[in-house]
Image 1 (tube, rainbow, N blue to C red):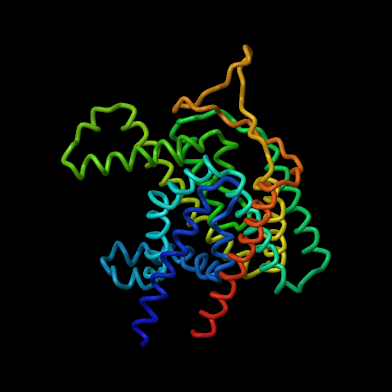
Image 2 (cartoon, helix red, strand yellow):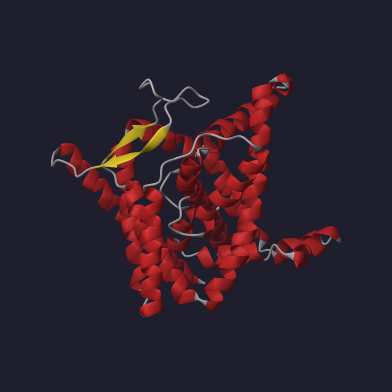
Length: 338
């Protein structure tokens, strides 16, 4: 019975990784919110901050089993496996739905974020002057970020490394969307679309015994960019986890209040009823990215007319709230079993 439950827990952990990976790729949505609502956020941060000097000492001394146990390896491996699979599967499906059913996808995520605000706030009782100020600062930053104009694409490797550090914040800081930050930095398409597709194509060619990609300058450039982005992401992930582990232990109320504020502020990014604005040149023509697609400038938000499409969208908002409540129920049930 225990082994069956353990297998089920492993499967659900991979599914949580899939959810985090998919959420991290959607601008305005934070994978950290998935971790928070699903009830494994603190374990996630704790496990990451175990990647420290002691861990590397165990690794370099060849004590691989001790290293694996020290960093809570089973948890991290299954979670990151789910995230990686998500980038080549679930996120591809999301790309399709964002292109063809954009309003309904944003409505679903808007509902999930509303549900997340309820979930985090319902057990938070430590409201005082400091936590209220932290809440306000979080909201102002979240809203302020949503109205910034994106920069242009930049494949300088040092800048790409910096993008990796910043973008991974969405995994560790709920409400702070790493993918939206990449849009603001101008590198969303380069780092989360082009380079990921390049890696996918490379693996597919290697599998068939085709190594001609080594002579493809564009492919090699994208792989180099992805490698530097990954290195920056790992650096940011470990660094942020140490900082967050410290502040969660010493300033938990202020941190939770700030997270609630960030999430409330992010509602502006995922507001379903918006028109995409694109960057233009002096002659009025659209600026294009490396794929020949129009570059997003920002969004024009508006209140919807009440019609069938709007009612369906509101239904998806309700569904998003129900998804979060279901995650909450599962998290509570899992904790009771443990």
